[in-house]
Length: 366
Ligand code: V47
Image (cartoon, rainbow, N blue to C red; front, top):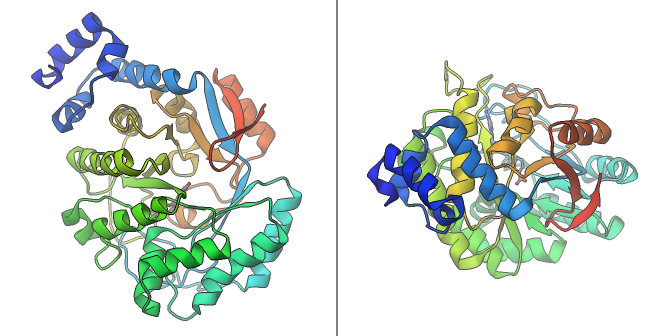
């Protein structure tokens, strides 16, 4: 019934009600039609779906991103972080450097450390994995979210071991969950243009499926606002929904807004706020089996992330403190936000700030 077009869609929603609408799983064409729906009507639908699951609660955590090296064997045109591209300042941290940061953030009350690196061919497998064991031994209460599927694929290729072996080593060394990076856009044609040679879409899903089969959770991202179309975004969401139906292992979907600076994609027109909010709303409605939708303020700005709470988002990531990948491409995020300011912003926008742990157990209502 929804596929009949925009007017019928509106009529359908008003005559059958939002809950009735939400009991129908949205197909590809219907998802595409949502983009042409009235902006505020779409927002209301996404908000109703959000409120049904989470009410007015907005989750965040006290975390820190660490990016231990920017030396990269892969070539992604959207990336400004990799030192092999436009960034001449190579760095590779030692385990001692990393532990020093972890010690600092632990003292500041962080509950999670998020560790994502470039694909560095000059360091050992133990450089990548041994750090997790050291963190877990010295700070057993910290949740370690680390290694994207792109890194897992790189380690497997570079060190001649299988995905299963890399994933087993991650578990052995204390990785608790996997971040959602490396997903970019799953459409193979777009991937060929923006990140040729990196982990393929099928491999990305294989790695996450194997991780979920180990009883572990992960996130999934989507890099949007570059050369992809709305159809590519919907295809991306549909592929996620399919694996989630099987494993239930994704905690959270994170649409990452493409940052335009210092990279080789040369996108002249940044995506509009309207299109960002519509994409948030559509993903809330399409991904009916992924509980959490993150408005990652580092790439969307804090202001738009706050508005996104009314377009389906129920999670604002965290205080972050420092981040290098998105800020290299122009995101104004390098120094994070203070927890008091962060929670005040959420409250003043009409939502309830709830500190969570990395797997969405509630820690404190602020
Ligand atoms: O995969 C790279 C993206 C990702 C640009 O799991 C860019 O909780 C925008 O995965 N503009 C890494 N984005 C970051 C990531 C992430 C971030 C926050 C939370 C979580 C989570 C994961 O950064 C990469 C890539 O898609 N990225 N360059 C750019 N120019």
